[in-house]
Image (cartoon, rainbow, N blue to C red):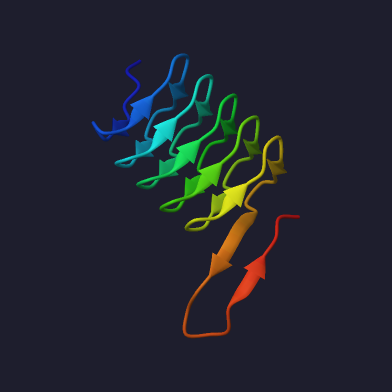
Length: 112
């Protein structure tokens, strides 16, 4: 079986990083040692993924997202633009971290 994923040439990839099938890693992103990226993950441009971090399948990290070392993002979790996940934290399945801006009042959405 062939594992296909798309990684921009400007991405910095440290040792022992794994990226699952169907995932996309955007320009200017840094993947630190021992990061594990699941299948069909979207990591937009200028993100940083810390050492020993685990991103489950279908996770999305919006532009500028920062995932600190040893954090775990479970399946379907989303990190909005410029949001930060602290070291060692676990973000549950389909939880959202960060602030969402729209025509409607802004709200802060915290993980369960």
